[in-house]
Image 1: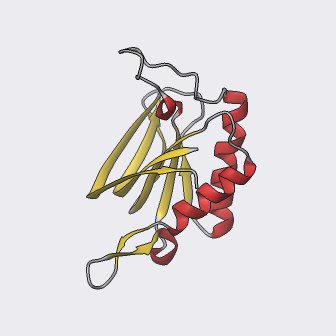
Image 2: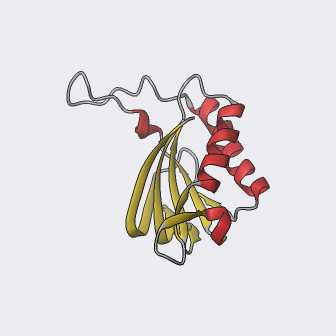
Length: 146
């Protein structure tokens, strides 16, 4: 599992010109799933995201997590995070999990985040989405499963 995590002031997802979700200050998480990811991977990823210390403390040091500040989380499925361009200019998607494997694991990350106390918004799986955000910092991290 791989995530591109951005600390945001706000973020929204649209499908077909209609806004389907929006968050205020928090994390925008683009989430990719690969073949050998499992429910336990989803739990670990959710815990890592919720406790990732990327929010400033009173001294301006990134020492607080989304859990500490009550930040919202937007999770958007993103199979292209496993695109491989090492053999040329056209990406190979072989490392990306098939939708029937990936969708339940993305849902598991969302469910675990909620269980941990997060307010979570989502994109729409298998839809052509537009994601709009205002990056805060900017802070952008790549988080691979741990």
